Image 1 (tube, rainbow, N blue to C red):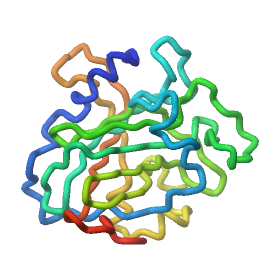
Image 2 (cartoon, one colour):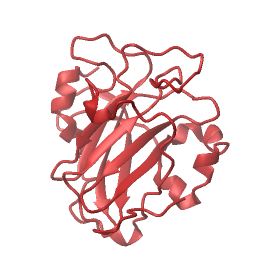
Image 3 (cartoon, rainbow, N blue to C red):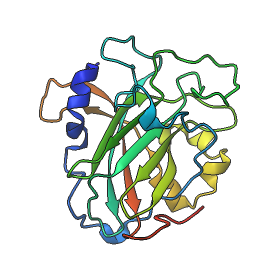
Length: 230
């Protein structure tokens, strides 16, 4: 697997391959990313106040042990409804570990915590609007289908909180109340299929890991509710 430090330095490569155009030809087909509940387990203290919150959630530090679970990557970009890329946008993620437990005092589940998993991450989009996180496939939390929480903060566009789901969990997804509160098109927009992709597409010897793509579409500038409620 790609070492932590190399991954952190190469997140731009995760968004290569022509998926992140400056203005998309298919902008007319863009759908605002739906708002979904933050849930009860947003980190305490806030992510930016945590000791570790970089883009590699699979271990806390470069010399720390690896967390349990299947390593994956989530890469994507942030655009507005016209398809214009948005740089300097803060993207936060948080999720359960492989056992389905959140690192939060309100999660009273019996599943064990993973002392080596970071549980959350935070970054700003680059000039191409891209973001990328290395993490693990989240475990199933009781009553929910596996998912990753996203919080996206763009200047003058309000804050979007949503959740990303996995196409491989179709049977669990269709039983999830929050997932099904979205329209079919919205569900498609927040569901990703993992594909084995190279970390660095320009390097034939680059490590490959399951990778999901997630495009976040925000509303127009100065729109205080950047996306419609569910």
